[in-house]
Image (cartoon, rainbow, N blue to C red; front, side, top):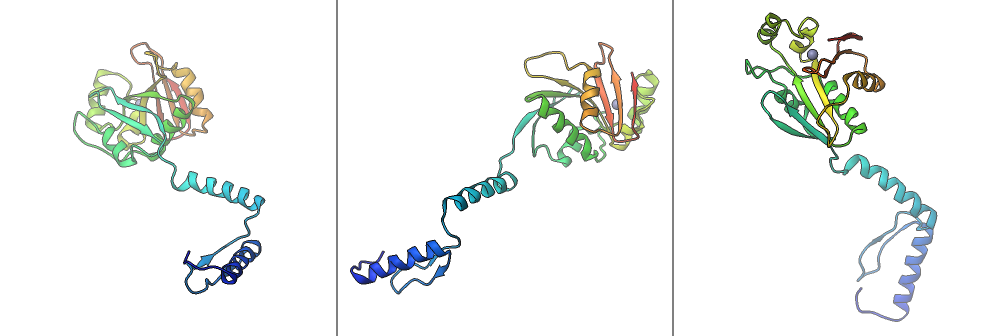
Amino acid sequence: MAPTSGPRTIAWIVVVLAAIVGGITVEAPAGYEPLTIHAPLSRSSLAKGKDADAGAAEVDIAPPRLLGTLAHLHNDENLVLTTSEPTDARFTTFLADRVTASSHAIDPRLLALLRTLAESHPGARFEIVSGYRSEKLNEQRRKKGRHVASHSQHSLGQAVDFRLVPPGEIRGVDPRVLEKEIRATGWDGGVGVYTMASDWFVHADVGKNRRWNG
Ligand SMILES: [Zn+2]
């Protein structure tokens, strides 16, 4: 405040108080900073304002929240899974066909599914068994006679095979349990359940709603 005293200061204080009570904008007298008061500062309005700000903060400035990790079994690559990472583009690269070094855009609903499942298993490690598979890789797999018949979805970037390993555990969640959890999210695509000890994973795709045991 500018050095001043006496009636002028008192008058200014009265103006400010009137502004606070009335919720109005006032012009500052010469020598003072402009003052703008947008709303009455009552207790209730402060509380409402605080709530409104908190709601906005969640949308605008909430930092990414750690959900777990993504571990690709074929090359030991790991990614942190948060509410914002990886991006869909990074996830596509992550799920690229490592044999032919080709990739295909991965349907974003698959990454969203992993995030949703992680909400029930904080800190989980998702072991990616298979993501995008080129027709060439699919053919190689087919000749070996394993896990291919229903898997054209992999060649469309519309499927992912994975395990969900809770923190501190070695063995993943039972694929039959995981199937139920996937359906509980409202998943309307395909779910394959592979319970052989050497498999122990689920297949999820965005194709037609169907299920099978591997
Ligand atoms: Zn699959």
